[in-house]
Length: 113
Image (cartoon, rainbow, N blue to C red):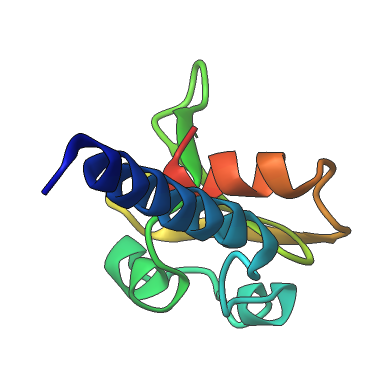
């Protein structure tokens, strides 16, 4: 191939990749909704929760307590679950509301940033 043809092929490839990345920001983030969070019950195991909720968006420890909080940012709100040291659900809460930010924020959350 000539140099001009390589440039055209490279440009087309870059355009296809850019369109795909931009499309990721416009698609719904997940099939889960806050309604799914209402099915979490005390004493469920962490593995059971993660089986239908997926990997949490984030986790943190609670200072002074031997427990962990996991949360999922969904397209229609936030689900938080507290676990004890054995991995059993202590408490869960569902906060409806759309996360702030446009397509760029949704894209960053989707890829883990």
